[in-house]
Length: 297
Figure 1: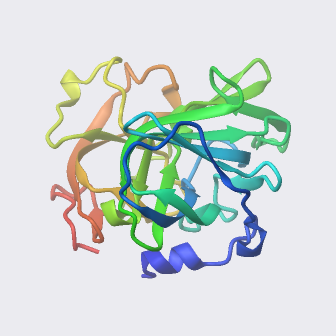
Figure 2: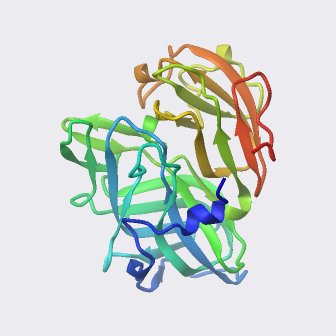
C-alpha cells in the first residue's frame, strides 16, 4: 500500500504545483499573540463516491479564523484554484487536491475555515451528463467550516478539509447547494483509514458517530452523524489517507439512498463497529465483529 505522503505528492490533473501562485495574506485584525509562523499547504480531500459525476469548486480565497477571533485570508482571486471533489477514476483512492502550498501562517489554535468560491465557475455534473451551478448553502459564495484545529508553526505542515458529499450536497430548484464541510485536520493530528470487506449491499452507507458504543436505538433525527461515506459499489476497499484521530462508532445501512441532507431519521441500521484512529497510523475497518484499531493495515 502506498504511504500517505505518496498520495499527497502524486501529480494532480486539475491542480499543478506550478499553478499555485498566491498573493499576499490579508490580516483582518491585529495579532495579539505571537507563536511564530510556519509554512502550510492546504488541500481538499476527495471522497470516494457521490450521486453525481463531478463536483468542481473554483476557490478564490481561503479564510482561517483563529481562536482569538483574528482572521487571515489567503487571496487566490488572481489565479482561482479549480478543485474536483470526486476522483477522476471511480475506483481510485481519494487524493488530497492542493489549493495553496507553502503559505506562511501564524501558529496557534483555529476555530473556522472558510472557502470563498466563484459561483459562476463552480459546477456539478449529474449522472446524465448535465452541468448545473453549485453554491454554498445559505450564503452562496462562502462555505464556512466550524472546526477546531491547531497549526504548530513547524515547517511543511499539511492542512486538509474533507467535505461530506453524501449528506452535504442537495439539489434545490435546478441547482445544487453544498453544506459546510465536515472536518478540518492536519497531517500531525490524523491517521489513515482502510475500509475492507464492506457489507454486501448496493445502497451501502457508513455513518460515523463520535465516541465508541453509540446505540442506534438512541440515535434520532437530531443526532446527525459526524461524517458519512457511500463507498462505490464496484470496489471492495476504500482508503482515506487523512482521517482525524479519535474514537468512533460506525453504523452501516443498506438504505443510504433513502436518507437526505436534512435528516437520517427512519434509516434502518444493520450493524456497527467501533473504530479508533491514531496520529500517523492506519486503522482497518471491517464489519467482522472486531474493532478497527490502529496499526491493523
